[in-house]
Length: 478
Image 1 (cartoon, one colour):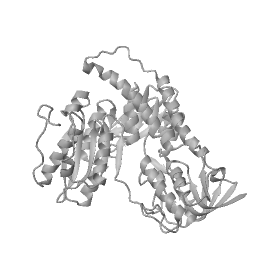
Image 2: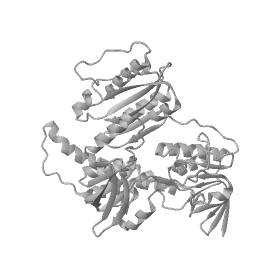
Image 3: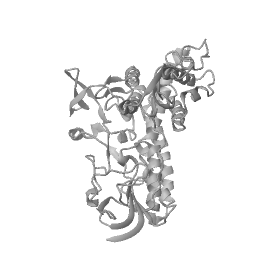
Image 4: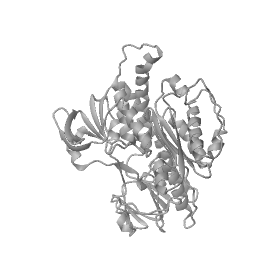
């Protein structure tokens, strides 16, 4: 048995772990990163990047289908699933390669391969070959798909999102269970690529959306392409000679369908259950995650820190990177701690139209008892959106009564990924609705719809007259 003593041990070499390593290394070279699997982040291997590659192919296919709207006829469209997946995997491997190159540049003594388990608050056992004593430890072990146990009987007919990006070709029929971000994105992309897709959800809830009007609009536009059962309980699944038979209950009646594969997008589980965290003596919640300070990454008042998806606090890449930076910096400088303010929340779902949340969401504001007002705009008649043939969706914006400060927004609509950035910046810099209205809006652009929503919000805030000039020939969303 080998032994190793370091100032900082980091468990996990994903986005959070790699960022924690760089931050901790500003303070010490006595450091080790422990990784049990392949190098390459969740984002690069099975998350953000390969999913966007699949979505990009789907968008091109959809644009061809929409060409007749503009008087352009395209005949003989053919989707070659094998070529689609070849590009997805090739580009995915390129992104993973960047991560592997970064890790290859680390000193050999800073890397240790194997699965770590706690012996006590300062000791880690790595498989059966090494024991590491660390003054400080950062847990950055990420998360994994959570799948109902009985479904594993489906064998290779059961898929999680990781499996999709290893396909050689596209299937003919698939059922996606879960209307979270993964389920929404993949189901629409697969439909646009010619896969017969059925999407199941519970409670008519879509992704991170909390505003009931936005949620309803998301369901409406998604259902235009995908067969969606947004409140249907999957009661049983059974492997057949040709695929999977799914029995589900909706509206008091039981139904069944047959598909080639079942894709479980039923949530994720923190990879902390395999660490023997109980050996630290620190209490955890029902999910096995300990209490920690979001602004420092510190677990209780210990020398253990936590970062990334494993905490389930901010399951987004940019948040995981921030987590890693905060936890790694404080683990490196411990016992001194530095509080790092969190950035304004921003979430984007890459459906078409896209979904975004920026700043405080509707549920948070409603549950807090805060006095706030709501403005909105539909993109059905918004000028630039109609020009592009992307005139679907709704934006709802929130402002504080009394101060007029802009608080946040939820949206499904065109260019939501870009509008979300603008609005999250406005929240972070505590702009008032009036200050936002006084800012420039070019014509004709989709952002003019934002101005319409802000005007509507300003009226509800009752804080004085808002500018009334608008383009009279561009529709109500200008």
